[in-house]
Image (cartoon, rainbow, N blue to C red):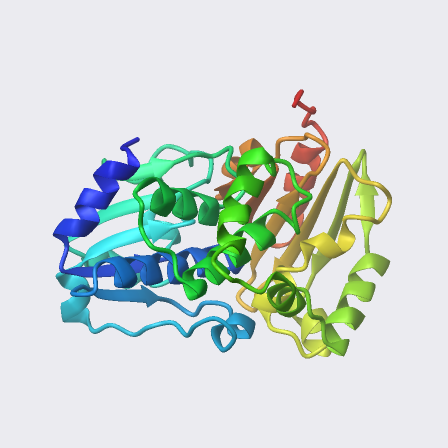
Length: 318
């Protein structure tokens, strides 16, 4: 792992910078992309900087839209990955065409063959949000953080910490948040957007809770396209609602499996009680954080193999 100073030098030397996040971006991914883009633009005004991908629709109007970049710009750019462990997991696969690469990340290592093959990477798996690393990068390098950048980074920390209640939220996290608040952000406004739920979302979450099943301490739900379409939701929207089943039957581990139209299944695995789910995720074409990870399976039968594997997970001391 290289230092923040090394990554700053890399940024200083690049005339064009593209910033990339993972598929189905969440608040941390979006916050890192926008936050880092604004920090670079504000401190190095001569550079071309693009945050590429879909972002989070509910936040694009409130904080900032994403960018578009042509193939020529990408081919000449330094590609910086944020909140994503390897090139294969980047949302926009044009990333492979970039001139050079760097990364800020907080995911645990993937299985062999899915690592980031470049030396310019700063990774701390124990940090609750990648946005926290971006804030620390700016602070330690005495870089200006504008209100827009601060709100984006705050959004990342807020969402990945589950509103400051997940494992990994600590004194260092709140020190970062304190500095962001001093930039003039409006935390309540951001929270209201992040945690707003329309009627169809509320109805679908109630439906998920009614479908919860339990196997030896693991609660889980398997959802088909017909089910989430009935509520007017997309695959991406339905697959992001794993936390809706957390409070049902007091689980050690909880999991949501969402089937796509083509039969591929997105599994979201979580534990707020010290049960590491990431090692299991790596066995099923996935990865992530120690207590929050994702899998890719094909059909309900293979998804149940994930559930059975999770019943064998034992807690670790924290």
